Structures are given as structure tokens and as C-alpha cells.
Length: 545
Image (cartoon, rainbow, N blue to C red; front, top):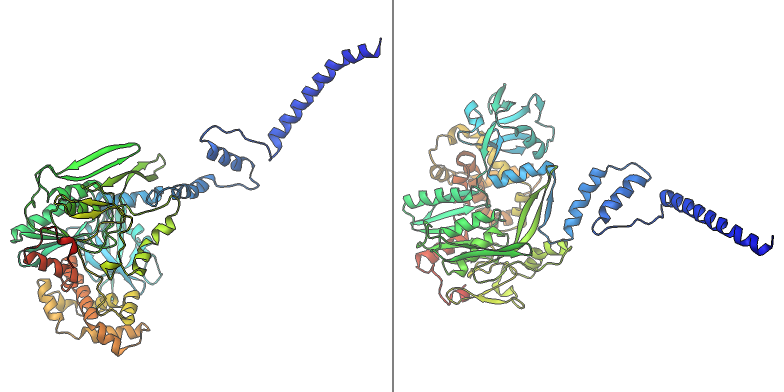
């Protein structure tokens, strides 16, 4: 046979063998080489990478922990307010919004690693068994909690529990040597969002709201009703330090002040159809003068209320520029008990402005520095330090100019109050010295102080006591040496706060805030504006100081 014929006979066999060997080698390296390529469908890259790690990483890896750590980092690439809530934290987060949790019904603080009951909630589980303010909780379910440095988180975890469950606490009472055991059946404990409501001046009601939750509107209506019964016909609503909360609560409270048909706010997003909220005319405060107090920590739902009142020319905003959060988060619950709060829309004030301050995707740190930058620029001390360049102007119903981006500007600017502030006073605050002395004083004279029937009588008595000297001596035992010149400068602040903390130990926030706020410059300005009949806006209000 000719060589050429042999070649053509052998060639198909060679080609077949080559294909078989190539297939075998390709399959081998595809299955065994760490450098192989993985073909991806759109959107599944993360799943593929996790599978590769789980399959081929040199050591065993807890994939669940890896995913838990990765999710917050994914969300950090979005806006600063989209966030992940792990399953172990979701219950606490939801409790804050729902306005209650299951526990024993006490407020506590720690002094020298001892749990001290500050307040017993009236009608709550602890009051029913005889727990009193000033009691020291030394054991919980036979475990020692005194002198062991237990964290607040651990204490709360042991005191909280399902409604109807029981917990045993060992209590040491002042002037008693014996530890007394109490078995407490846990029950619902309210988380109030209205801190206090009282007549701050003749005919003027003051209401402080600390956050917006599911029960805020009901609490607010109760407060307004009681103040009206007491003769109040004008209101100051304090939203300072209020970081926001439930969107609906802000709409409902705004509705109480606006006539029917007025726009309160609207929201829209890519997958969030435009939704508008209008006043329905059922509000109980549609004609009374109203002042809203704000500062740089008034955010989100607080800004909805402030924006609705301002844009509708219903009342005045007094204080400082708000935080600037105009984004709406929707909570999406996941099957493992965790959740994400994802920004799904922007909200707008009635004039059409979005007060959300500038941010860049994935740059949360820069966003968080905004308040520090405001402080450094002097904005907290001078209205002239606020730069409105680049902000778009809008008009209120009356035609007053207002601006988008960067928060709600107050109609009347009040700088932060620095009178009496010294380094000595700052040290007392940083080390909780005033609060500690107030506990000590309350314990020492509890029997006498318990006899006062209201906070005003107790306050009058405390004004006659040498509390400033007591604080200074107590501070020295904590390593803070006396500074006579600085003490003299801060004496008013020290004395006022000491009185307020002592009164709180006997009359809770109802006694604390009237004392704490009695010379507050923002509240005093609001009272002055109302008394002068200037609480309703005019076209000149934006130039007032």
C-alpha cells in the first residue's frame, strides 16, 4: 500500500484520538484547576463567588457569617440611609416603632456597677410587686449583677422577655441590710414618644416629641386635649434632637394644624408611584398659633412636620437648620428574621422642595461629617454662616422664599446656647457626675423628699439647698479637682441640672423637663413671639432674627 493511502487511513483515527484526549484533558482541568473560568448569567456573580469559596477555599468557612458581614457592605454602596437589620436586632428595632416591649417596667441606671431603679412605671409589673425608685437590683434569676461590670445590653436582655414569663430579682433597699427577692411577671411596657406636655407660660402649651412611632399621634392628641382643658390656646412643638421615624405619624400630626385640602407632603421614586398626603380638615389645632422648634438633629419625619407648617404658612420654625433627610425607607422583611430598610422614594414639602442634603453613592463617611463641617463653619452660632449658594428657591403659599437641599431653614434663627459652658462643666457631663450626685442625694434624703406632693414644691425646696457645693465635693471624689473660676461661670448650669435630675428621681420627666427648660433661649423666644401675636408668618419673617 502506498504511503499516501496509509496516511489517509490513519488520519481519521488520529483526529478522533486527539478529540478524545482533548475532551478528557479539558474536562480534567475544568474540574480541578483553580484557574478555570466560570460562566455567569446576569446577576448571579455573587452567588457563584460564594459557591467557589465554599467549594474550594483552603479552609472551612462559615458561609452564613460571611453573608451577614457582606450585606451591610453592599448597602453601603447605596445612599447613607439604606441599612441592614440582623435578625437578633429586628425585634428591638420594631419595638421602638411599635411603642412598647415586654419587660418588668422600670427605668434604671448604673452607679459603681450597681443597677439602680430610677423610675417605676405606674401600673407596670414592678410597681405591682412593690419595687421602688432607689432600689438596687443585685441579682437576676440568681445570677449576681452587682459589682461585676455587666453591660446595659446584658441587663436589658435578662430583664426583658415574653409577656407572661417570670423573672426573679434580688433587691437591696437603702437603709436595709437584707436582700429581698421579688418574682415579677413580665408585661407590656410603653415606650412613650411624647416626653412631656405642660403649660410653659400662661395659655401656651409645650409638647416635646422624641421620635415618631405608631403611637405618637395618639399620645400627641392626649397631650393636646389635656393642655386645652388647662386653658392653652397656643402651642410650641419641640422637635429638637428628634431623628424622625414613622412617616404616617408625621402626616397625622401635621394634619392636626392644617385646614382641609392643604398638601402635607408627597413622595415618589423609581418603583414608588407618586403618593400625596392632604389635610382632611379634622385637625383639632387648625386655628391656634403654633411654633415648631428644630435643630441640626431634627430629621426625616420631623422635617415633614416642619416643612408642612412652613410651606403652608401655618406657623413659624424657630431654632436652627434641620438635618436634611428627604429619603423614604421601606422595611423589607427576610425569611430568616432579618430585614433591610431600603430607600425607595424621596419626599417633598408642599412647595415642591426635597430637603435631602447632598450625598454620593457609597460615601457614607463624608455624609456623616456634614454636621461637623457645619459646626466648623460656624453655622450653629451664626445664621450668616449658612451658605445657600446652589440651592433652588421655592415659594410658600404666601410667597415667602424657601430652599431645597440641606434641611429646613428656620424662620427665626437662634444660635446654640454657650452661656456658662466651661471645660469643668464638660468634665462633669462626660463623667456623669451630676447625675451620680443626684442619685446619691436622692438616696440619702429619700424619706424626706418623698413627702413633696408635686415637682414644684420639691423644686422650691431644692433651691434652698447647697447643691453646688455637694456636686463639687462629689466630683473631687471622682478625680475632678475644683476649678473655682470655672465653677463660678458654670454655677447656674450645674445647679439647674442637679435640681432637674433630683426631681426626675421622684416625678419622672414631668418634673425634669420644666426645670431643665425653664431658661431655654429657644423656648423663651417662642413664648415671646406668641405673646406678641407674631406666630403667624408674614412676608418679612425670613429676615427676622
